[in-house]
Image (cartoon, rainbow, N blue to C red; front, side):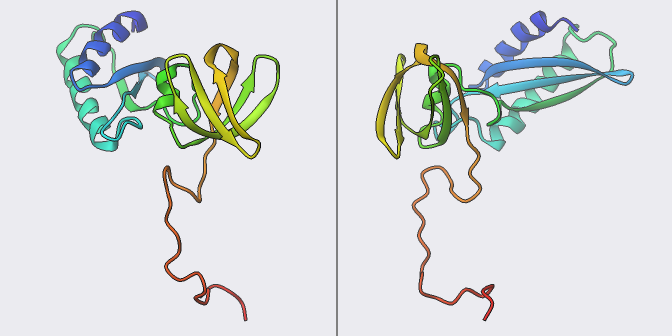
Length: 172
């Protein structure tokens, strides 16, 4: 499969659903090809595509590929997903779509920071950490990755209803 041709073709398909093709990977999987399409976009909340959009995109991409000659007679497996949290943030839109999230940043000079994205423009972003706020130009950032938090959702301000209540799992 020609990745360049597939990318151009699938960009048009994704754009019709309001999404963007982030990356396409083609790998051999036994006698088949594995076609992975990673999508991005603002989504309904501005924080990336939701599951409904990915499901719609999967159907549209599958239908478009079946109707095209790009894959020929090759048997393939199609996987469609978001770009995921493990992929580095590399463009201003990635930082904007991750407002409120905890990230780890390595600056070009080797300095490492960890904090929450509180603002993002086309040229820089503001990171809040324990030491205050830092405005970081994108040209100064060598690497930035979202940190997975299992105990806090984006924008979560949920407090326990009764913090004094007995913990049913606490040993007596």
